[in-house]
Length: 241
Image (tube, rainbow, N blue to C red; front, side, top):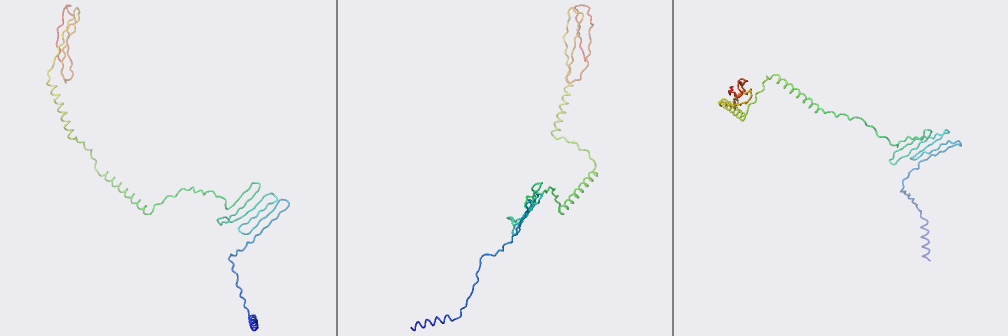
C-alpha cells in the first residue's frame, strides 16, 4: 500500500514541472528556381483576320494576319549554343520571305591582292651600299679602258713541232727543184710513116719531155705537101723546143 502511494506521488510531481519545446527548422536540398511569367493572347474575327502570340521564358512569338491576306510574324529562341536567334517572316503575293539571324551566310569575298612585303631598314641600307659599289666599279672600269693605250694583237707563235715540220717541207721543196733542173732532156723520135700511092705525107714529130718544167711551144716544120713521085717518102725532121 505504501509502495502504491509513493508511485502516485512521484507521477504527480513530474507532471507538475514546466515543459520546454524546441522546434528545429527543416532543410531542403533542392534549389529554388522562380517560374517565369508567360503571357499569351489571341484575337480573331469572322472575316479571316487574327493575331496571337506568347511571351515569356527563353522564347517568344507573335503573328498577325490582316484582311488583305498578308501574314507577318516573328519568333525568337535560345539555341544549343546559348545564342538568341530571331526570325522575321512575311507571307504575301510575293511568296514567303524570311530574315533570320541563323541563316547561312555566303563566304566573304577576299579578292584582294596580297600586299608586297616591305624591306626592313637593314635590307634597304644593304641594297643602297650594293648599288653604290656597282656604280663605283663601273666608273673605274670605264676610266681604265679610256686611259689604257690600244695594243695590236700579238702574233701567235708556232710550236716546236710546227717549226720542224715547216723546215722539213721547205727542204723537200728545194730538193725537188734541184732534181728537176738536173734531169737530162729526153727526146723521143716518132717513126716515119710512108704513104703509098698518096700525094700527102704526114710529117713525123719528135716529142720533148721535160719533168717539172713549164709548158713549151713546139716548133714544127712540114715537108712539101706535094710529092713528085708516088713512091716518094717524107724525110723525118726533129722538132726542138
